[in-house]
Image (cartoon, rainbow, N blue to C red; front, side, top):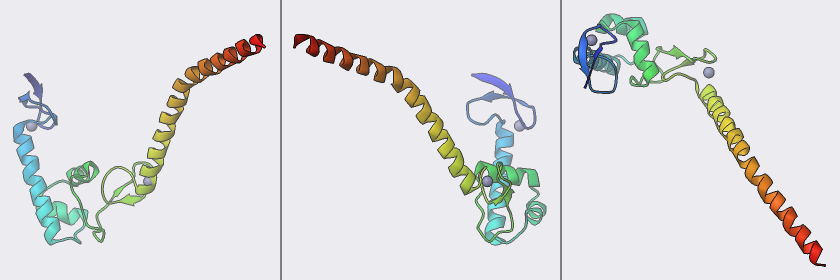
Length: 141
Ligand SMILES: [Zn+2]
Ligand SMILES: [Zn+2]
């Protein structure tokens, strides 16, 4: 088992996997998260600052939960974060739907290119084999 420093409070603790925060900070986060969820449930139209003041959870932490996709807010909530690519307002995650789609397509294209590259040498050998076969056939004539 590994002993590391907690990313939040710097305390040493036994790391058992997952997020690199100590059990104390983890517990605190769970509490914060619960508070946030309860408050948002009762005040779905509260702004980020209002939520932060009412729960004592920092705006940075709220944004962090939204980015992680852990905290889900309703569509009519004024709370939002920006898409990391185009800056449009989104409710959760890192990218807006359009950018997420574009990124996925870009990734798929890159994978396809790689596949094509790997396929090429194989395609060449089949072609030369066929060529060879045809030539032997001609020789028999
Ligand atoms: Zn800690
Ligand atoms: Zn975007």
